[in-house]
Structure formats: structure tokens, C-alpha cells
Length: 401
Ligand SMILES: [Zn+2]
Image 1 (cartoon, rainbow, N blue to C red):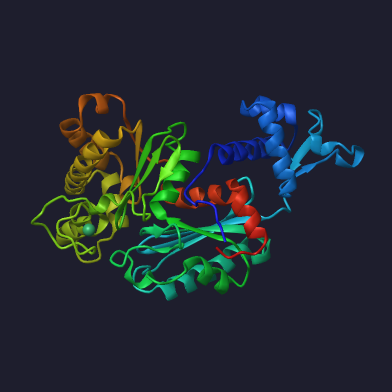
Image 2 (cartoon, protein in one colour; image 1 turned 45 degrees about the vertical axis):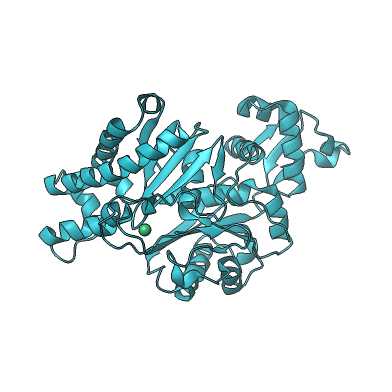
């Protein structure tokens, strides 16, 4: 069975989402209206609308009065078919789970989250995801049968060929498991599930709805329990041969540093992810200190917390300077729990980039905080489900992958 490259949001998929957006905001519109609103050519809009009608997502309201509706009369009125279905996104971090269900224009209808140990047991994490999914669907008055597809983000490299976790060291308990099939079985619906790396989904989310809008060469960095990056080049996500592109957290920071969970020594994650920062500050604030407390203290202007964040930012900025010298991105977006901790982390990153990146590189890149917070992965996942025609049709045939 072939399935679409899950990390790709092609120009066509983006145009399709733009047309769906325009239809959502206007309620009803003609093909000519949509061409005006989106800036796309009439023939592009016409082709997309025919496709959306064939997929059952858009209704031609004049269809009954005209045999030639599929031909695309420019004046015919169109609207979204709200009964066409809903999309689901599941976001696993190393220590949390978030689930959201949305209509086909990516408007979130219900969402929920909980803290769980995702790394420790794949089985328990998938059980929790299925349970939270059923709860979210019930909150929105829906059932699994209303889903046209789902996207799942996992905090490790995903092997594109098999849809399985591709590294035995980053998520050991997930190796050998087919997360898409396991999830579909637990939810009890033949729903197609796209599995991708969490930072990749967040990159798509920020690129489509957040701080990355308009940038074709974009690096997104998620600074949370781990550090992961999504790399978008020429408007397409770069995944690498084994799905391992963007593992920025495992770039060397100090050859004599701590042993990392990947088995290497002195990785960036061992000094600049949430764990080591919480440990450092916990010495002063006590054993109950958490990432949430850290973010709160940062917002309150606590001097020690600011110091620790600036230093973490410097370490990340050094790796980003190297990455920028090689890739030349036009925008770098910093997200994740610590990305939300205000300006200190970004100050540190900016400082190291100014020191280590080439002047020409520095002059052409913008460094920004993410604007979607913890929803970036969910929104990226939803846009993948909604934007991908090929995957949509396989989901409708009940293929669980
Ligand atoms: Zn490592």
C-alpha cells in the first residue's frame, strides 16, 4: 500500500487549505469570490473545488439546478459540508499527551491534555491517547466514525517507510510498535493515522498558522523535555533518510559532559532542555520545582531563572549558528515549554548567533518566539490530515496507516 509522505504539505495542499479557510470565513462563496479572496487563479480554484466536492467536503448549492456543476460555473454558490467529517490530532511529548478534534477548516471543536510518562510505556501511552480521544469526541458530540483521519506526533525519529519509531535509543519502548495501527485498534475505528515527529508537526503548525507564516526556509526549535527541530526548505519539510533530521538536541555541546539518554556524551539536551534547568533551579527552590514553576518565575522576572535561561539560550544559539551557516534559513522560530518562558532564552540564542553565525547569515534570518504555544503540534497535525487529498481518500477506504 502506498501512503502519502506525511511530512509534506505541498503547494496544492496549502492552496486547498486556503480555499477551505476562505469558505469557512464567508459561509457561502462562488468560485470567482474564492479566487479573489485567496489570490489564486480561477483555474486553480476551480480544480481544487472539483476535488473538494468529489471528497465530499464542499457542497455546490446550485448543483440540483444545473447538470454542469462539476464544470465549475463561476457564479455557482459553494459552502463547506459540515457533516463531511472531523479531523483528530494527538500530540505526545516525553511527558504529556494532548488531543484535539477539529472541523475540516481546522477550527478546534474540543481538546484535552494530561501529563503522562510517554517514554516509559508505549502501551500505556497509547491506551491513554485512545481514552482521551473518546473523551474529546464525546465533548464535541461526535463518535470515532465521524473522523476522516488522524495525525499523531511522537518525540522521536519516525521511519517514513514503516511508520514506526526509527531509533532504539530515544524512545526504546516504542521500537517495533506500529503506533498508527495500535491507536486505530484501541479507538475501534478504521481511521487513517499519520505518524510524524512532534517537532515536524509543530513546524507545520507554526508555518501554517503561527510565527512561520510566509517563510519558505524555516527552522522551528522545540525546547521542552527534549530539544528537537523541524527544518523546512523551499516550503517542504526535510525529514532525512531515516526520519532523523532535526535532532538538534543531540548535537555535541561538551565532549566531557553528562551522558545523554541517546547514549552519547555532552549532547545539547544535557544542558539546555527542561530537565537540567529544573534540576539546577531545584537546588534553590526545592524538590517540587517543575517546568511550569520555571516558566512562571521567568515571567515574574526572577534573576536566577533568567540567568539559567540565558545560558541555555547561549548553548542552543551556538548549535543554531552552525545550522544557520549550513542551511541559511530566513526565519527561526523557538517554541516548546521553555520557548514560552519569555525573552531570556531568546536573548541567549541571539547572543550566540551574533557571535558564531556568519554576518551574511545573521543579516538574513529573523529569530522569533512561536505564537501557538502547546497547540503548535496539534494544529500542524490537523493541517496534515485536512490538506492531504491522497491520504484522505485512503482514510475513507479504512486503511489504518
Ligand atoms: Zn543525545
